[in-house]
Length: 242
Image (cartoon, rainbow, N blue to C red; front, top):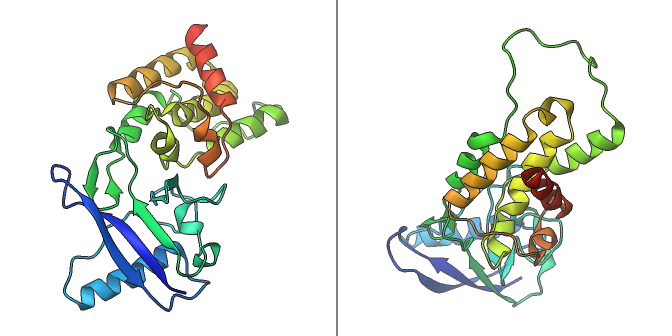
């Protein structure tokens, strides 16, 4: 398979960037999208050129590090899938692919396709935890949790913090990410104690980081690789107004 790649190249945060066109040939259909970029980088290195910088870690759809907008779609057009889980068989031979980083003021570009997502870490540090007394582990099953509550908490906990919700939102809002982290704890007895305080702290930090507000476009729910529901945002707003 052969592809024409239009890749965003940018030297650093302060410099201007632009799309640069590359051609890759003889790509096996079972090659993953990131492996295809590896193949391109090998060619560039052989020619003594600067390789394309992009984020990745687990390459299993778990860590949330891979963060590419492909043909205008965060993580590509395939639903419930991260960039690293895409394969070239998902694209027609000879197709042109436009590849760029997340676009948000709060996610400054470090180089090429790699962005800084430290803002998410600071939001978690502001309230994404429960306060407990230090000591030995409590007795297993000492607090019984309803299965529906446990399932709801687990669904929210599947958020991998990739930032696709921010990248697709016209307001660059991190509401779905923040709401998922808040709802994860809200469904569990250990987390209910600090519910309102947690919501206030995390939302304030989100605004301080420069993320926009939710205006119910619901694009975030559509592109989320873990299919996290916007109902989490409703829970977050209810806690804030309680």
